[in-house]
Length: 206
Image (cartoon, rainbow, N blue to C red; front, side, top):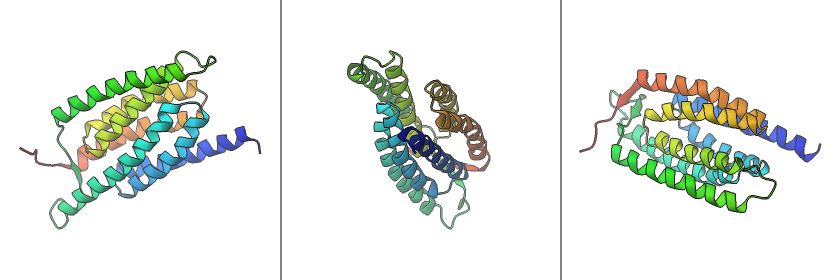
């Protein structure tokens, strides 16, 4: 088996793990954060192989976000244990200050990533690739942060992002990942409906 074939199979395996993670995310199972970490490690290799270095670096962020999400969600579950809300999805009201700051940081990170990627890109790298890499990386970080904060708007963000990402991955020839993100579009809708139907809103902190 040559390396190209190996990495094709490896990408399919990474996509399967990532899809399982999202299914557990929709179902609100704590195991999702462990799967998120494993998927991030696998996709770090996939992105490096395909020359998407910003997305590869983001996998380190996703590992940290997985650990943060696991701690925050576990704390949330313990806080409602034995109450009428036990077993329900605890949704945090959107915090505009957090939102504005995070979006401002994301915009700054996007342009910084593009600048760095464009500088280090080889002569045979298409001019659009640094833009794509920076866009995918920035959106992933922002949407993951919102998911960890338990904002229901995160599903809307994932819906839009997954459509854009699926198109870009197919364009890059990353067929397994393109298919994965096409499925993600559907799971984003399911996740939003599930949270909206079965979620319980936390009281806004004063």
